[in-house]
Length: 191
Image (cartoon, rainbow, N blue to C red; front, side, top):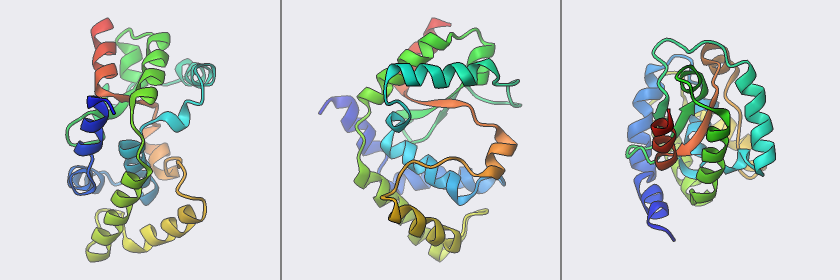
């Protein structure tokens, strides 16, 4: 196991991950339980589910790159998913507007996917911890009832990756790639 893998697994422990993410989810009225699931999945499993191979990853990026729209107000290039920032969402619109190149981003995405140590148990531990916390107290639009409904659906499918909620897609029009911090920093140095 590389030292990077150890850092990613340790820094995204369920309690720390939720302590970091819950205030952000609560503050955003568009975040639904599907979006919390997706964040938790990406923070613990990385983005490799979206990168079966370089060719597929490039085609997908080419489609998004062609029509990403204008940057959202105050949209950051980098949004950490874990408290230590070792993995996060690298937003296409601000990267593109700063002169970033799609081939560089494709390579960073594939490299990040290959380096990130996906731990299915880390995802389920964080997801179940979210359920326990929501049972005690809802957070924004996140409730235990919504969690339990989605959990039953995802458990039957063995907890796969999931798309953002329609509410979040309509409001934020998310366009990003999940990268390790190392590859995000490298991309920003190329600008």
